Amino acid sequence: MNKNELPLSFSQALAKNENAMKQFEMLSENQKHAILNKTRKINSGYEMDCFVDYFSNGSLGI
Image (cartoon, rainbow, N blue to C red; front, side):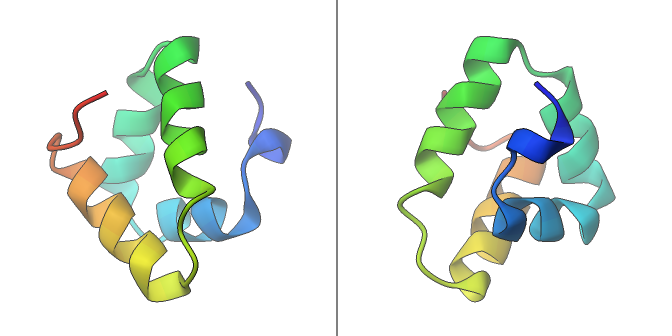
């Protein structure tokens, strides 16, 4: 998966959170797709930032 496949709002949120970016890079392709499916249900920048913060703490069960 390359960075061009990521939704823009998710890419921007990851860029603001280095830990989340590292966590995302360590995931398998299937896990990354599961995360991306969850991002499609997010409707605001604030929600995306919260999602990425939650994800960066390793709290997201996928």
